[in-house]
Image (cartoon, rainbow, N blue to C red; front, side):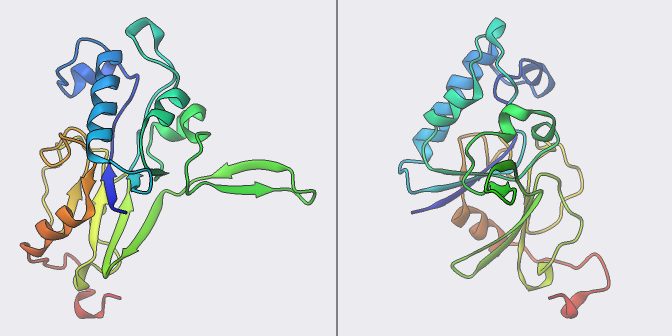
Length: 204
């Protein structure tokens, strides 16, 4: 079992082709490429994948897209979502069977709705990471080596902070598919974090 991170797939979104200069002729072509990249990296159904926001848009058949449910089931692994700005406006994306969705039920056990997180703390094999669609300026455990993993910026974030990584499709580290957690840990080990606020050694 391995853990992977990826963000900003924007499946079915024709507009993202021009906005980010993605080299595809249609949303359908982009979808097929992203599915292939995902499944080339994520080789086992037991692998865990965290999508840090903006998974996809509603079906776009005019540009070769398809239903997000169909795409979802083509992707290997145990899939989790941290909600992005486009996800929260997209009922199709929010209703997918994400592993980390929490069911809210009434007194009779009937499902009312499911909820998904906007911020998640990942703790795995001695590694701690705060995961959010948006990049945080400061985060819990930063002084002690915790990572900050995010999407949203499509590689355009100008202010660089050590141990904070954009794991989106349009970044150098995300272009080939979901990023193994150990790769991010290795990159972070080469960086020295300088606290940007007054917490310093008191940061817990």
